[in-house]
Image (cartoon, rainbow, N blue to C red):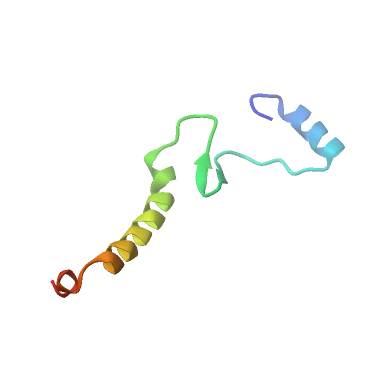
Length: 68
């Protein structure tokens, strides 16, 4: 529940038997938050994609490009 009283969330959690989570959460590796995300929230995703990009660039280069 977003923007609701904490005691109501606890009541619903007991009725439907679920855990209460807190923001920011991750959905498919992307942070989700009810407010604007900060740069630090995006860093893990940026680092992960930078690693993948380095591997892709290295495998698609010519032999001459790899030597340099």
